[in-house]
Figure 1 (cartoon, rainbow, N blue to C red):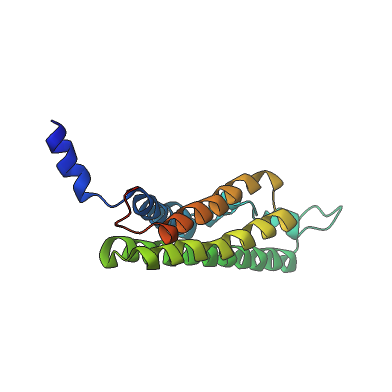
Figure 2 (tube, rainbow, N blue to C red):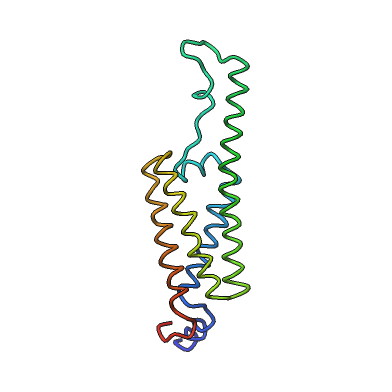
Length: 165
């Protein structure tokens, strides 16, 4: 039984590479495809929820929104969805890059650089949410910062042949 486990374990990449591949899968699915398919819910999870059309285009005391207000409201909604889809597309690209470097190229240092470089966008996202969004969503961005630092740093610090792995 232990020899079967050892054979299975020998075929796996080191833990930091497995975690980086996991981050790539999350970027591809939860933060990429899900954001493109459902931008409204993705925006809530990201921490910058979209404003509803009714709150952007009605006058105080008006019984019904004018056609101009409805048009403006629809434009605002479309613009918000476009920005959220752009964020999701960026995440999709990051996921494809991480999975390519981790599963196909299998270059530990390049994977470490890509994961660590994700720190730039994660910190920027955290500042944007802090300034404009829902403060409670900051925790998820802090987890992303820790992932970029810890996983990217460990991929860059330890080599594949180190005794630790």
